[in-house]
Amino acid sequence: MFTSAFILLPIVLAAFAALSFRRIPEGQVHSLYRLGKPARLLGAGPHFVLPLIDRVVHKIQLGGQTLKFTDHVEADTAVRDVQGTVYWQVLEPERADCVIDQADELIRERLRDALRTDAANDADFRAMNARLKLAANAFLRERGMLVTRVDLSIA
Image (cartoon, rainbow, N blue to C red):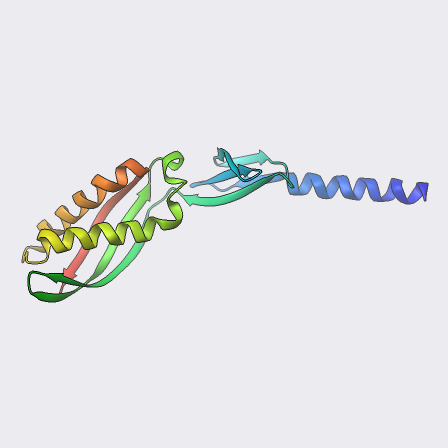
């Protein structure tokens, strides 16, 4: 029994050491929660975590991300089809961590609101896209995210 403990102990220690090591790729930030509460953000590189206590909740991409946008927008009395692509990125992972799971829906809602108010009747798509980008960024900036480009067209 005593010898089996000597054999089992190094195996358990090796498994614990392997689970404790996290390598975060370049261009990503992982949010680490300790016992269910936010502890810290892990930047690119190697990190030591406690396997049974710490948990990576969000893997935040810092590079640009795309969102395909298709919707039917009611403006005045007409219903129009809007489709295109929205490009966005995370600038401040500390702020974005709590809303990163809902980022796509937050962007969609902001664009829908902006399209309903003034942009749906605009024939100049470049000006419309610039106004949509400003409207989305006014809300998203507080949450550490930024819409970098909007390419929408109205059918």
